[in-house]
Length: 282
Image (tube, rainbow, N blue to C red; front, side, top):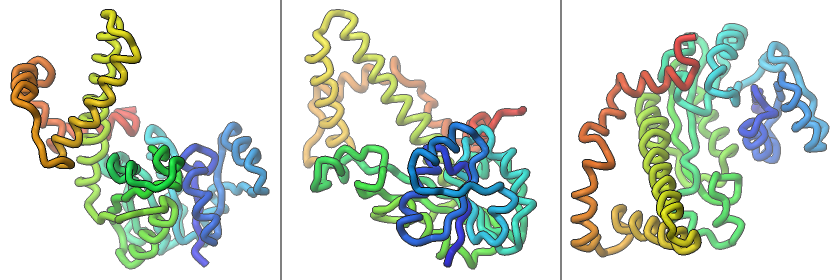
């Protein structure tokens, strides 16, 4: 039986991945040093027995770091040297590895993964209402995952990928990419660009409401145009933006975004971002 240790088992992500892994018969070991996390695990009523990290990692096949980005390098600095030869470590975000925060061990295999979350139009196609409302990917709606081998022996790759697919199930596809490519997707594409644009749209909505447009009308108009705009620009419809819409977009572009916005994808910009996410220079 595959033995999996979850570091940070009482956090949101720790509890999210533990449930499907437990249901699928993996032997789980739970590590949670925080009092609030311990209480959350106790509240599940599953009789979960917590262990120290030192005890839990002994004999583990896979050690999952479900800990915040800001402290993951400190946790890894303590744990990785204590792992047995042949252990695999799995990080749930590329930032620490892309930033070079984790010292590699040649006899330990390191992997990184991240869920895509249920894609917009795939989510709309889910058959049940509760699946269509699973925006984050809580085990109801289909989502894909990205998966990378960072360093160490490659032999455990298939096993760790299976663990990833089980813990984020139902999974539509597992895309094998590199850590560097994953860092382009997150934080650069998703957190920096996508969330930045969406936050700006939300600010615009708030401004037109403050200027006197009735909130319900502004909200319905914004949500509807978000959906049709995405459908048009991402090729979901055999249609195109109107001439007026294209003119408005072209004229406003320089007011909304810098000409060199794409520099967020350059290696030095990504390195600066992932270093900040994982604790800066402290």
